[in-house]
Amino acid sequence: MKYHYDIIQGTDEWHRLRCGIITAISCPALIMEKKTNKGYQDLVKRIAYERHTGELAESWGGNKWTERGKEFEPLAREAFEFETFQKVTEVGFIGNDKIGCSPDGLIGENGMIEIKCLGWSAHMDLLKSMKVPTDYYNQMQFQLYVSGREYNIFYAWYPHPKIKCLKINITPDLLLFKRIEKALSDIEGDIKNAIKLLNI
Image 1 (tube, rainbow, N blue to C red):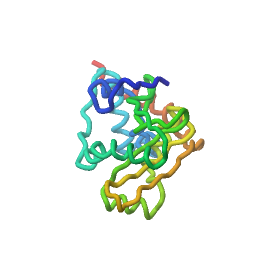
Image 2: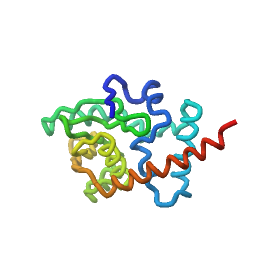
Image 3: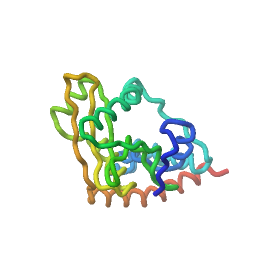
Image 4: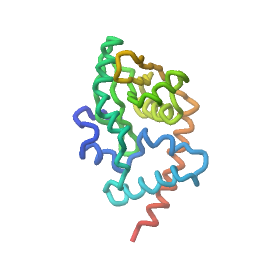
């Protein structure tokens, strides 16, 4: 797997690098049990389109919550470093020509971090459950699968000094890794079939 430290996430170059690649954000759709589910079918069609044309498919433009995350992520990263005395190194992309991920940061030689800056209600739900929501968990496991790193820290941060953050350390889930490997193998056939539909 190649580490792209020179690419900034969200830029045109970053989007081009991810074209036709299954990334961590797509893991929940990738491992859906039923291939008839819309999430899985949309993933197949998008990857097929991008691999066939070499161009990015139209994508979701985000909302106020994703914009909030972009705004607060640097502050959250600084807060984590101050709190833990651990340096977080930014990286644009990790991957090859089939799979990849864009973690919010790397910690030392073996760790990484996934930062979430949610609204107050969702943040309170996290503090109550003390669990990583399933979609985030699957995304983080895919990051570990791609990178081969030993742990991934879920860090939920809220921009108010009276509200505590949440840190949960995630280690490789080998059973989920097997599901990911099988899903990656299975989806290639579905992508090839979808590309056939696009061929002139």
